[in-house]
Image (cartoon, rainbow, N blue to C red; front, top):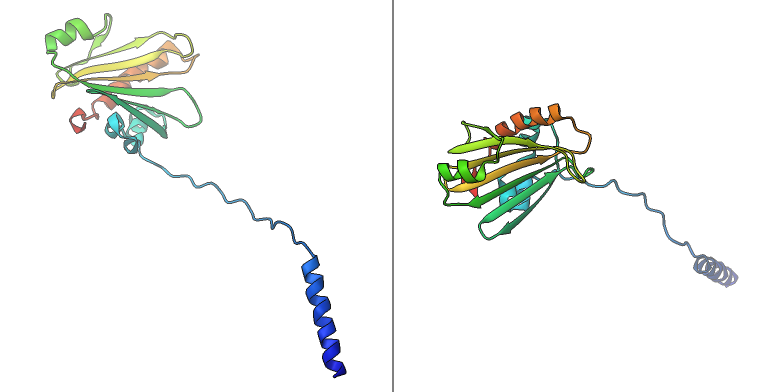
Length: 183
């Protein structure tokens, strides 16, 4: 009997001793963030016409964030790198009834260079730096399926004029990959 009483006493001490201790929060190691390579097309709208790898192939710049917007028959996509505001690329595609003569007279900016191998009619131009950003390279074209498209690359401040001229040439190659019929 004495053994049972001792055993019961020891068990009571062990249980009460464990209950009195508050273990506190348990430290769990931080998990590494999961990085997903999401395609630009997942943003919808005009972003369905762009691909991050194709942009990088033609321009040498890697982008990983895309956002789209649509209003009526106009669809827009802006892509940029997650860690920087500039450079950014904006694609705008609108339905139009304009013809080649109207495009040349009314849409193509003065001083823009004609691009013959882009849609029914096309141009490329550069613009100087302005408030908050550096120079801009732009390619615009009248696509065969009655769509007006503009691809605009805005660079950070401090980018040289020679660099933006070279980029405008590469931007034509990127524009040639955009299939506006997919909208």
